[in-house]
Length: 346
Image (tube, rainbow, N blue to C red):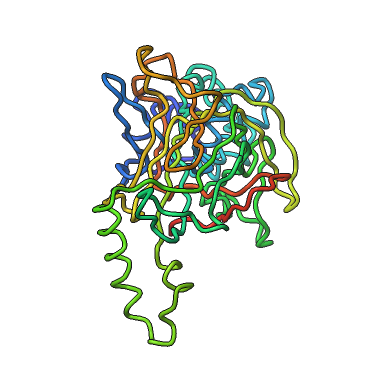
């Protein structure tokens, strides 16, 4: 779409069009179907977005982190989400004032529709399969043991956002932290993965095909386990903003309360072979014995049980771009003692 910078009314018209029809209609790209995961639980459908800087910028507004009266907050949101309009009009005060006010109205009317649920991905390596317990051991550097806080980064966190100052430094935008520290109400434990024997056999034989292509001197137990990669997809709902801080790498981070609503572990990052899953939104029948405390023994190890979400959440058609992007990376938050590996699917 050609924009004529000298027509002062046009920026507001363009943004008004964007607000009416929604950016997905204007900016739909091939592969948009890969930017979210849909989970069905009874009649409810839960949409989990893949973390991107754009999606996080909207989450921050949904949680009330930013002041609508501050012009800089509006400008920086449009820089992240509407780069072409930002480049064309930001440096003309008269035109930009109209764009800014349209953006302010957009956020006032739509921030409560922005997604709170995200899918966070983490690669894992599995060790020996125990035939008695029918479970895989998670290798030490990939165990999640009594972890209540994790850092979540969108995989595009290092990409240039709209404007490049040529410095090559990580671009941090005022008011919009690079990443999130998700603080769960209960610790997460994932140190063994229960997998039925036949499914485990399929997994092992599939990974062995790659392992056997190694030179004979490289075919040993240590290298065997390094080829047993699996992929954890965590279904996280953020619900309350707490604070901001700068971490040891000088990244600005937002502390946000979150609930782990479930997770899935696949043998592949394309989600073709499901090994194990948990859905903590399911209500537990009162006639069944409930676990003691906050944890449940699964496969010889404790796994946290979250309270189900009492609301039935239907997908909302929020006005947003939905750019295709890989899942986010997760790392242990500062102060965590549990070993954790930040490797993510490519």
